[in-house]
Length: 109
Image 1 (tube, rainbow, N blue to C red):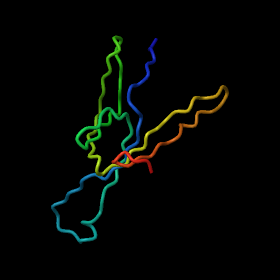
Image 2 (image 1 turned 180 degrees about the horizontal axis):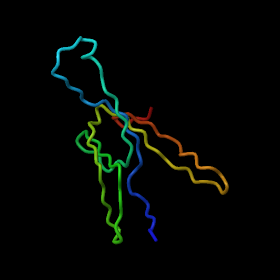
Image 3 (image 1 turned 90 degrees about the vertical axis):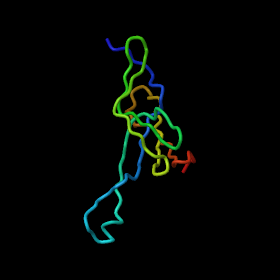
Image 4 (image 1 turned 180 degrees about the vertical axis):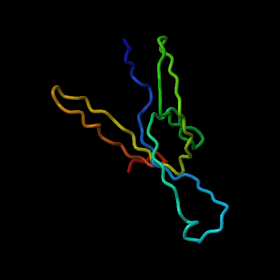
């Protein structure tokens, strides 16, 4: 049987603008386009203006955590949505929880 453990990091959705480059000749309108990305996972760290989000987390039998599929996202191009879970009432359906929306400075929106 797999033992359930509380994950020690907040679950987040990060909306961010990725760097896009192209060396081909193109119109100015085409060159001004952006590429929006959504990354979901656990915010395992935030240091020096960089968010570190792991899409997979695991815990061994000794209680040591490991992570994989880690993205380093510049906070200056990111909007972070902290996901919270509400306690489920007996017989109620899961609703996914409320959202706490913050921009890259940590300010609530």
